Length: 116
Length: 115
Image (cartoon, rainbow over all chains, first blue to last red; front, top):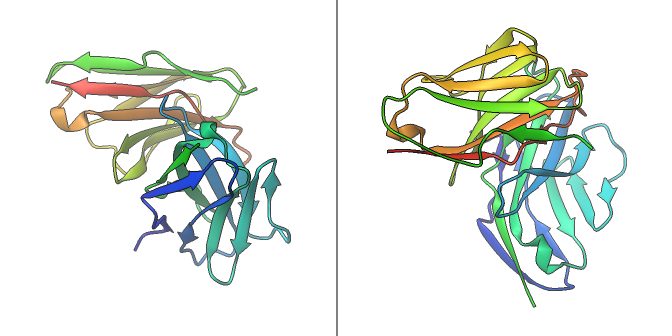
């Protein structure tokens, strides 16, 4: 079974609009961390935002926020006021607390295109 | 700012060649990782290292080896390159706190083509 599922291969959004990128996860570990990365066409993976399983509040970082619904096992990324520079691949990833490898498990990504 | 650099952005090699991909981080991170990225498959862990001269296999270590002689440098080695190793290779490093908050920071990637 997939541990991280991103069901949207591609998304379009108009500039200045908000967009939500979906991510669901599967783990039986009570302790885990969820990460979102952005990968522009240049290839570098850029860390955006982090949410811990015990965090009481949804994480926010500037225009990025994480809609964390623990019971549904979802951690959707919300980008507000989209900009043309937001066009990129976005990856959701998870680290399980019981893992002794610090390994991140990645989803297959969502390609976001922002149009004027 | 964390800086992770990789020796080449693009590399073209022939089948059977020995290939070295180099990664250097400048933040004194304990952990370093090598991933490969293929369309539709996301990122998959090849090897990682949590200390100098220490290494652990990831999910797809076959056909690869690694070397970490110095803390800041982690090398990925393809002993005999094959066409199915054509891919994007990404190096990452993390502080190594062992906690779930330990963020991995990535280099720019090396796009390897094996002919």
